Image (tube, rainbow, N blue to C red; front, side, top):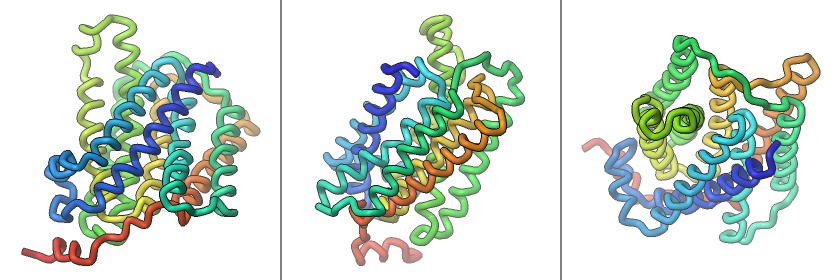
Length: 297
């Protein structure tokens, strides 16, 4: 594993984690009538804290794109999942909460799971799958799941809705990372013209904006404890599925390696949940009067 890829991916995770905390701090004050509407982004653009969070998120995505350009998505995605560690670090500073057993357990599971998956799987590059049907089957499955989750989230805004939206956004971001990798390859092989004549960079843009609306809608209707763990867990799983499915990433497939890889992914998910539910994470309680926005007009 390249040290530069490691540094870029962890730097991206740091920017993303800090950015998510700032975004949620601002988004929870947004009117609920903007739920799942592009108007939500227009309203939040007036909030300096949110703009700062978006700036960090853009920096994180840029660093992540650089890491994806030099390393396999199956390697970079688990490293990006550590953004929750940085989000917790900032939240702890704001809340003054000690890490405690739950925090340490989550930290060990997340860091250990990432290390186990990478060491056991030994992600390495390969030849991308040329069959477009396979591309669209995997991408379509991810997009279809995201659409189903978003549809159900509309009916349960303040119960399971935020979690469903966060999972949907994570799926979109995982696909976005895969398309970012493809766009980088096209640019390396044929320059700017080769990049702009493909659909992938436009797909990256559409998925990014759509995912942003879903994330901010999740942030405005629930605490970071509910939304961020689901987002952080879904993104690497979707990215790894795309990487192995059609980008040509290869993992070890002997029985022992597969068992350790599955165990590593399970540890990552459990660690994410423990860290996301840590008391240091902002509760983000809604103002009581905002519930009026949910009443039928």
